[in-house]
Length: 396
Ligand SMILES: [Zn+2]
Image (cartoon, rainbow, N blue to C red; front, side, top):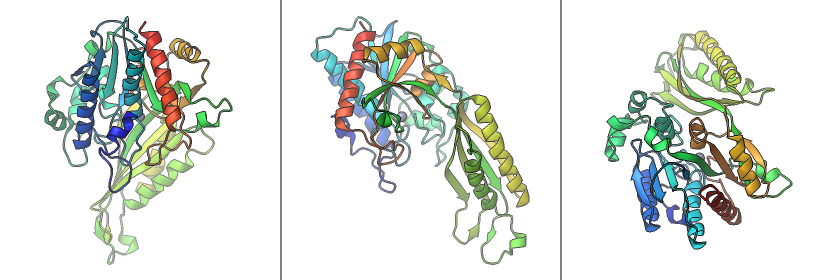
């Protein structure tokens, strides 16, 4: 399978799994690999103004059917999240070619840039830029942990940062977009039907917030407790408040990243940045959840004599995928189940502009965003077969 060809690209020596982030060395290597694979299949590859790659089978034009996913990963991510959708799309083209299928509509295999937001903090950056969900000025100013801006990284990757932004030319010709993705939970595996593939119904509303707690940096040995203004205290209270706020809800709230400054063992930090990922079935539910956690953060901050600043780094409303397309594909695939997900996807961003569907491939443990993420080869093959049927149907 094609995934094996990129198994050594961007391996994460420290965390295990992969570190492949928008326009970094590993990502550029994967993009070059994709371009070569697509061209080897006779597909014409071009890079759009936002750094998304489009590989065309047939002349680009109205009524096109697009499929694809992303090649970047979270820090220490698994092998399947993203790349499975890309390699399955290429493999589906091979299946259709072997059947002598000639598409009546053009087919595009798309690789969206920086889907995980692992480098610049905003997930689905390439698709958000294309749809206008994020403005170009905001995007150009995003910085990675080393202080490199998206504008600088884009320029280094051969893009013109002045051209970043809404791309109606790329999206207006699309009849639909179908993203195949490894399931990032165990719903499919737990169903009695034992089917390897499902279609998606919806995505939770979700966003990212950065809470910066500021206190007084000081000596760990000489500063009496009464004299401390330690921002780690309200930061850690906020982590616990996020868990408490979930009681009795369908929501999710996670702190997966917390950075103390300056970050010394014998130093009371002067500030602590906490990134909160919060998700719930609707925007009001999500706002309520975040308001509750932020209120707890402010209270804990005041009690320690610290200040806290809250910034929303990204937000996306709940997504319901196109019901007609979803039912059409589920029927075409023999009545496969339809499942919701708590994970964000480029398909969720595109759904605002284009009829969009997703195919999920069974994940036997449900683990994702971790090196242990897995899908069985037979299930991946079933995913390719399903995607080939879908493309054949939609592009006929
Ligand atoms: Zn993904």
